[in-house]
Length: 177
Image 1 (cartoon, one colour):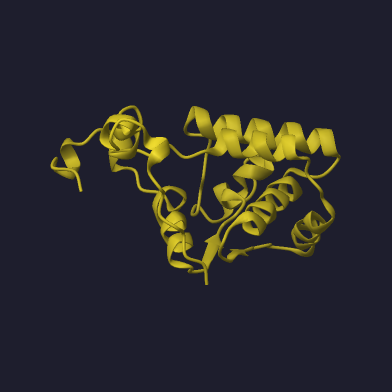
Image 2 (spheres, one colour):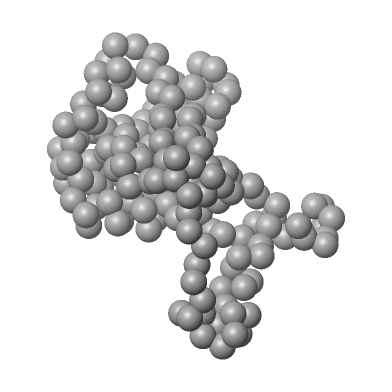
């Protein structure tokens, strides 16, 4: 816990994300995780670059926009890999999520929310999409969530903190269910 009051901390230190905090905790405790809105309310489909139709205008809720450079980079990467593979952006996103779940030591269960049969068919088409290791790495790298405080602050001094050479310190075992 930071000694600074929440309003005094830099914005990045105030941001909390499931990817940064809850998913690692769930994995370390052997808990499953339900992944809500795996397509970011349509953001990862790239549809808001072509139109404003969808949650943005219909529901006026659960709206994710390209509000940061990283979000734009993620959408760019998803669209590029969709072009390379011939799959839809939604299929690329769900295939990447499925691969992340397969590599996790716990269960990740996406809660999909198709609003019509076409969207459901698109989701199910992800079952046939095979991303290459290089494509998976590109998606993982571009979407990596910054660790924030205190993790980023201690990364540069890890050797010093752990007695001069962190490679000699045995990391804790992550329990699995």
